[in-house]
Amino acid sequence: MKEYGRLILVLSIVAFACGAILAVTYEMTREPIRSASEARLFQALRRVVPETSDTPQPMDVASDDGASVRFFRFPESGAVAFSVRTDQGYGGGIELLVGLDRDGRITGLDVLTHNETPGLGSQILNPSFRNPFVGRWLEGSDWRLMKEGGSVEGISGATISSRAVCDALRRAVTLYSVYRSRIETQNSPPEGSNAP
Image (cartoon, rainbow, N blue to C red; front, side, top):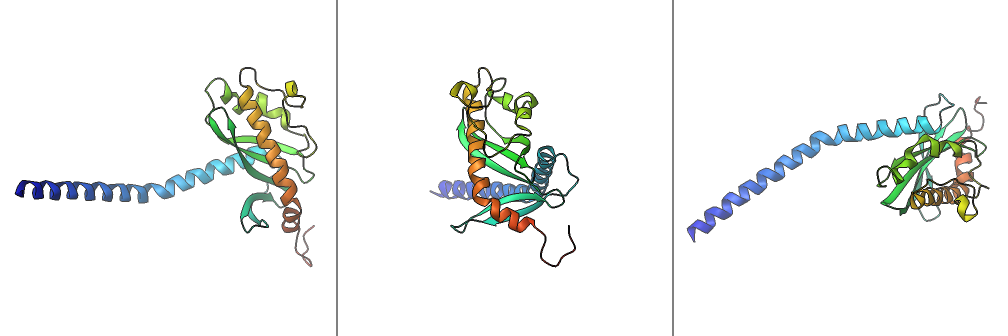
């Protein structure tokens, strides 16, 4: 019986030490991970809105149900960027960052996260797939694959991944059309200011 007590004490000390090491490691790595994540997002914002020297400003836009959606606005150019997610990918979720000019044309498209098959579905990362979206109107485009009657050239051998990008763009249309007036209201200079 005494042996069990000692065993429990030793296991408790080991568990406490492991927990303390994990807590210290978490605290030490939390800030570097957050900084690296912000740097990746900033680089992606620069890729999707490349024609401006504005510094992107985060803007949380309230929805009718009390939630908020984060957009990034570029005040001088009037461009905006926002992320949209779909769970229709072959490997699960795909998150896109979409950049738009002030008129609603796509300035860039970047894949933030995905779990697509390397060499097939991961081709959604290639500029040869993403670049044809640039210059197209977000609203008013038929975001379906050509073989399904739409206007998007899919990736051979990666139909599900291509279809998922189309789904994300349809979600982006919905999101942007719902929040567009709120973005434009928050994007305009306050009355009485000397801003152009």
